[in-house]
Length: 54
Figure 1 (tube, helix red, strand yellow):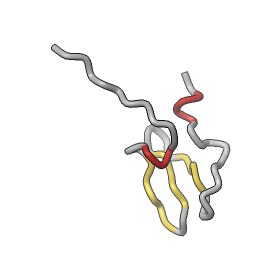
Figure 2: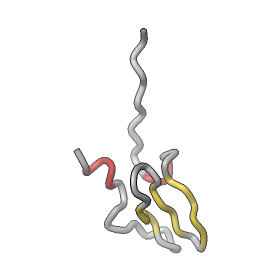
Figure 3: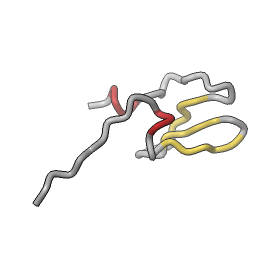
Figure 4: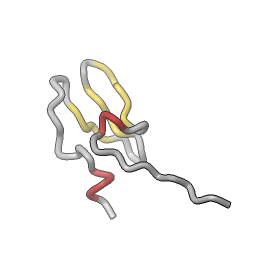
């Protein structure tokens, strides 16, 4: 069987786990929802949190 190809994203905006939640905010819904971008596209402290966590 072939290996699963896990694509690593260079930004939250390109990830399938990043969802628009209204008023310009985006949240990562991977495990526990976390706000990753604010209404003006400003990254929060949780931006790219899944890459930092190991």
